[in-house]
Length: 388
Image (cartoon, rainbow, N blue to C red; front, side, top):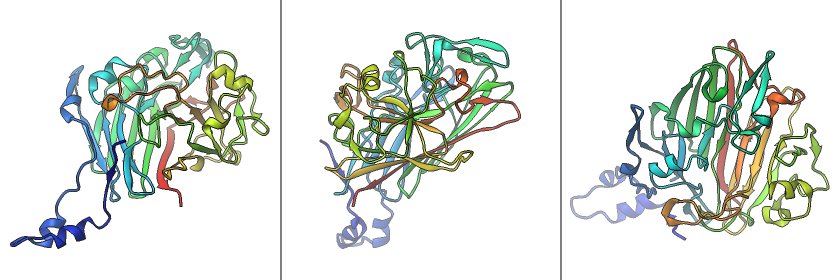
């Protein structure tokens, strides 16, 4: 496993090593060594007249992430463990062409116009039925075709710690009504947070449910599966699904089932049990209902995941009502990946903050309707730290 250690006393070491004619001030101005293994030229291209490139964000603690504005994909995200070792903890590719040629991977991407599944690839809004493309059995998954993970985002602002992007999907794009204008910001804060904020406006009634789909492995990308990850969810209920992974419409208590992560459990502890919901999905691929007071839209802790062996921890905060947990059940190690790694079955965990799947067709779920006089907002924070 390739590890990179950033020494906290780097500046003092440089000072002690000053030679004749050198000054402490000169040493302190040196840029820290970049962690990225990416060749930026592999991400430079013009697509449909729009420039694509690789952007680098850093923070004061040595964390680093790279992002391509093709699909607003997080390409790398380096986080420390308890020994100070930095590992890239997101799955992805090391060139733009692999992102273009593997649109179904969703690695590191925002999802829209509707995250997760819509039953029978259709929904009715204000008495009109809209037909979508069925790309997941009979269902529409993640706004296909033309999802937000395979379009070029316009970069509005790029600094060391912020990447502000915009995308406009026209009326009828993918079958969805209304021209939707999305502003999305990525931040890498000095609190070791990868923070995402979304705002969206429409010119006619539509539905909107955006999410983020990074595949995380806190061992390091390509370093085995995530069955050794501990998971805790702030959720007493989940939305059970049918045989094609569409919610049944109930909010089922998790107590007494392998879906209960109200106290921490290893992901691998119960994932292969004979519980029918796990058998249907081949593991965890379900939406949990985040515990919150009715009517509250505060940003709350939704999930915590960590690796006991290396101490690397990630907390997920959101103002959304649900979080989809997906444990890479369909990964098989055959697709391209960064650094010639292998991404095998259960090689990652996705924690997608969202409204519930199929909400447009299930009126008992929180509404995803967006009207011209309204603004869609969403905040999601992935905060990294180490266990004591």
